[in-house]
Length: 491
Image 1 (spheres, one colour):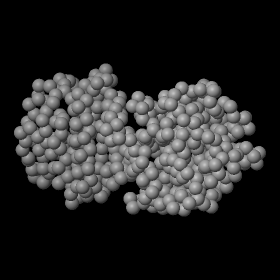
Image 2 (cartoon, rainbow, N blue to C red):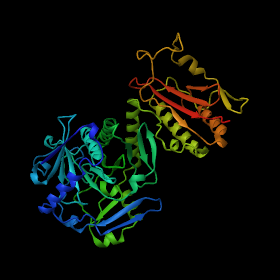
Image 3 (cartoon, helix red, strand yellow):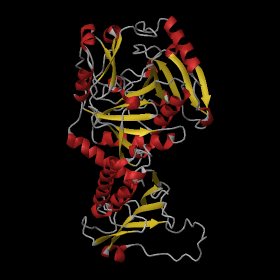
Image 4 (cartoon, helix red, strand yellow):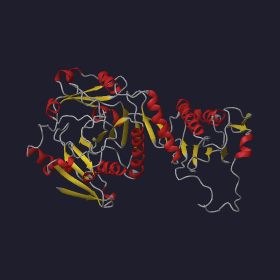
């Protein structure tokens, strides 16, 4: 067994690529696989749906007939069992290598050859194998998974996970890992913001998922959020599949799978939800189309009310842990020049939804009906439309002001300050729509549940700051939202 030690500084491309390939060839030549899996499967075809979703279809007869029989589990939270098959029962020759983070000496991840592979090199990553963990995501397992992702240098390397009752066949914590050297739907799927750093899939995709973006720098924070989301799914008894690809971690809530019923073609699980369909029957493979793929994925969608309860629990968790109601990673800020009123309208809706959620969570100092404040518009000599607003509640309920003796007063952590998640949002719209968008943005205070707004305009008229401050979160964490529009007046 080969041991690979690494540190945070070693999370660079191709750290384990050569070892992985060498060890797979060893397993292959030793006859340990249940069937031969070519490096390039000749029986592959591709299709794109009307919505632009890219899928692949493969004919894998041997996997359907020669893989280990599936096990039906009784519960999403079924404990680990020594009586059933687990990875401690494999031979040592099936182990490819073990990863050991030097900065966490009590942790490790073992790479095991999948003897019924979907792709050449398909291995299972088993976090802390000797701890006999049930098939349930943990924070440390996600850290190990993300670190492994960065230790591999292959562009289309994918990691996947099935929960119990979500087509997991072994109740021993593990991820599927392999390279499928083609771009598929999840690599470029459009995302919409839910809350903080949690996104949702394009509403046109047949199965909604919660998505988190990860980098080498935020591994631990994202691992903690992923664990929290999967914990919520367990609490709601919702099976799920996970796909890690292209710096994104997708978590798909799905219907419980009856693993005692195995179809002759496709059973939608993590691989299929990633856009790759390994088919067991040649006739079914021949007849597969993008529209059929969309239909199969949609077939495991949970009831809308159950999904809503899960979504609300995730938003509530994010608010209680100081997450931003809106994030600078939202789609609209990626188009800094071609901004336009339509995209601002989308921004309006997201803001309104976010503050409605904050209002329901009871984090505001006072409640106020939308549009009840007396307001009037003022137009400056330079053509900038401002909105003056009378807010009776704010005068009696706002936080007491603090006297600051000097303009250069240093920051004092002992006094009230905004949480470390506070961000400023910059957008550079086109000149033609600038003034209209600024006026529209200011009028948001008419429609928001929260009207605790402050508007600051610099003397040079080049920066406008729209600030909303929400106090007294349930966990006494302050949440702040800032939107800054730069260059609103160009000479």
